[in-house]
Image (cartoon, rainbow, N blue to C red):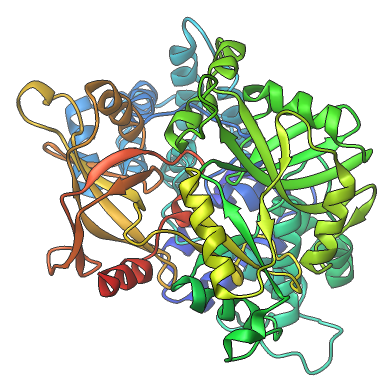
Length: 586
């Protein structure tokens, strides 16, 4: 498939007027792609050249991309800067640059989808001295062979931000629309927001995506094997699964009743939850899934990042403690001060996530323990559809506790007083609070379904996404010290600002934040920049106020930086609804 075909579809997607048109156009693209190109198309339409869990980082910034466009086209740098600022999009500026190319060649190559993907993937392998110039040269070569529309989406793909309105939900619906409209389930309802896909088709695609985290596999299976093939897809050790997520309880007692009622185990009366709810310590650490396949052990975070190399003592503990030949365990990595044995705060432990040097020394200073609380697979048997109490039985037999590997502390309380005592014990021990889990419920990957709730102290810090930033004045004038924060609005798949952050970080922390944010810049206006909403910060504050100044309608009073939430993606941030509930609970 020529890249021009993909670029043309991207242009149509970008100008689509409604969700139904967006899904129909994307489905047509998927049907158009042949067997070799469908996997590449499915990822590249999201601005990616690999699934998340591969951890492929191209290392391409807006500055590097600008240099590549200039090298390929020879346009005036100041004119390109003006176009970028006026259009608010470096991809659109690249389109203009190719239209006004001053150094056209008589012969140029024809770009293909796979050729573009492989060239971009190769950028991730360039390291060491001269790597930046090699990346510029490679990207410039693609731009030089591109027509204006191709250049628009080439640049956006290199930056990982397509701006065409296609999210995971759109891809899900489009796969069902493309390949599953002839559903064997008679009488199935039409899926909302799609021209012809059925509810069962969309659900089958969604479930398969949660299990595989790879739409390349899902799309190919849907096309070749239909719903039956999708339902046959299973967990695969070494390939991370989306973890089940928790909602926040509206108080301990209400949470006990609510979590039991979710699957019909309880009712409106408080005693209805007895025997059906597990109260478990909520640890302040890094949520991970441990894949054990003989001596091959891999650890993936909630964001599907492979952190195996950063926690050698936990890997050794899993090799020693897990008696099952093959297992997939869900748990929380918690750091402990080597001198005192006290649990470390998340920000201390997060230093180990991206550490490449002196890993053993840091492990000795801040050893980690994996507190396991669920078992998703054991010795060839996938347990997702089993109730939690059955999965806990499997967890009990899957491993023996050893240094660095333990069961999460938990109990099944008889009354609210016992549950409150568990909560108090967890908080007094330095942990975050408690989890409330429905013992009769199955495991649903990737969803906040209410089958488990978390209860923490009120006015807890918020996890918010940086949406734009402003350079500071005076001594910090070269640093992005004023950060605008947004809460996630799932309904609109957008971020609504809740205030501006300017305190709580050291010069070193602010310098690191600036480096990370400058790589995410999509628009500049003087000393103000708009960034891709990717960086999640943990922020504390004194109170919440109503405010017409910010899109959420609320503002943080005296917000203060606590740290970067490396374990969270942007859509894992706290929601606008959560901000509203916290405001009302003050």
